[in-house]
Image (tube, rainbow, N blue to C red; front, side, top):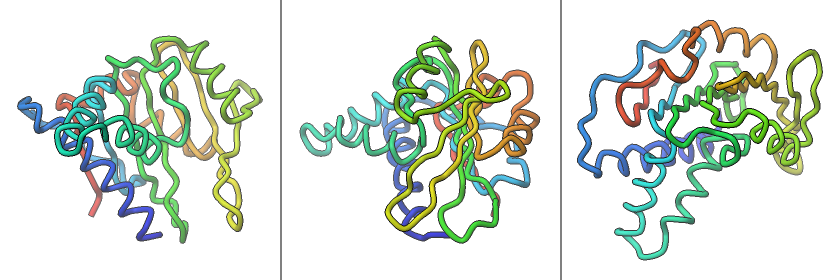
Length: 195
């Protein structure tokens, strides 16, 4: 696993956790245990408020850095555009998958949606995703010497499921259950890892 990727991902998680904790909100118990196929999971109970608090904390530390920090954290945590169609008052879960890859681990997402059509249009526009067998399929460019990362996205009425392939998508859906992201978090932001 790439130490640079892991360090960046953990820094993004910690910025989000710190921003939420500094808001003075109590942090009740987090989600249940991680499935064995996940290296780590970041659970965000309310996407919009958590990102706003993190951005405000960054602005207090250094003037006018909140917007830059927000874009950096969102880009580090989410492999797809999450501004359009997602529910800012809804939850999100980001899993790092134990896929045995030598490079950065793949990730899987469960996102609460406010507008499934807007989310689908944003993913199609940003990633060139095409529908195939009821799933949106896209490839994420990784760099000059690295192969593209495939993504499979299932968009339901109020939930988007994102995984590297259909097999991971099924694992993700069975682990999250019928509630999807909505049943994931009682605390504002929780980071759990399988150690």
